[in-house]
Length: 114
Image (cartoon, rainbow, N blue to C red; front, side):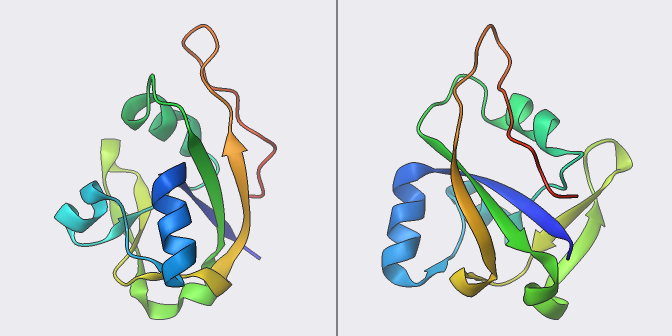
């Protein structure tokens, strides 16, 4: 089972849990899709888009549960990134875990499924 990842502010995720789905962050809403990263892309995503932030969660999502609304599109440096053109149904979430704060400018990441 393939897994993709979303870094999310804790308060935003709690609102999604209450609503029963995640419609995205303000950046996602602006871009028209929910941004995700593969396990290999996550460290760079965290450093580039979440530097200095705390109160973050890491959301692991089952790719197969998203169906045709998930598209792999070229982005940063020409890499293919997963973009979801729909709200994220919470049933597709494999797990949610607090994301450690940065230590010395680097954010430690948990063991990830590929």
